[in-house]
Length: 229
Image 1 (tube, rainbow, N blue to C red):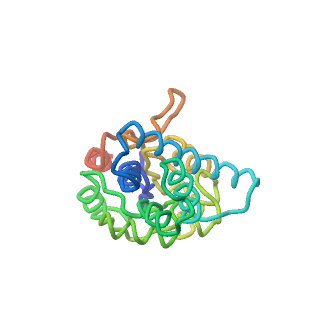
Image 2 (spheres, rainbow, N blue to C red; image 1 turned 90 degrees about the horizontal axis):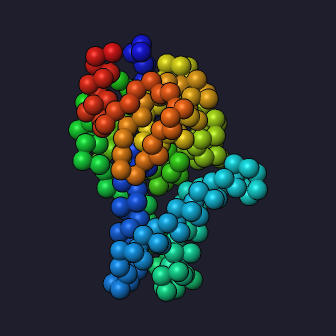
């Protein structure tokens, strides 16, 4: 594979452990929540976000940014947990957990190593304000961070990947999209970007029919492969 001009990184799930951060927020609702209940509430949150992303993509509802959708999910989860979903403070505190996500152990060092050889672009479904906060909390360092909010759409809509190409000043085929989600990489491929799958415990693994340019066990492995390319 020819050397890319820049790397474009998914953030949620690829560089930070999104479920872990939301679990922490859910556990803060009640000390009586056990692991089974916490996982049930996490799944409720994730289903809401997935469903609303699809509804927006299908034109069934107007675009709302990630912060608004997180508040909707937090309200549902608070109600289901027996907390007061009408309490603004409770909902806001729970929604804020999506901006306090822990990085994976290799994230900081891996980004620093890759930044020595490539411009790095963060491309996230998180809103501009949320992306700023989670970048600061997790210690993510970019040359450029782009929010899907600029396109008023969510990945895998092509408008979002086009933002990275426009912001970087490079054609899509000169960019390498890095993600732990096969659905994300498929979206990037449709725009002509090259793709690198990074294995994470919470990612969406490739299907047998997927053909990505690189497959890596982590950011160190990705850096090794790019140095050999």
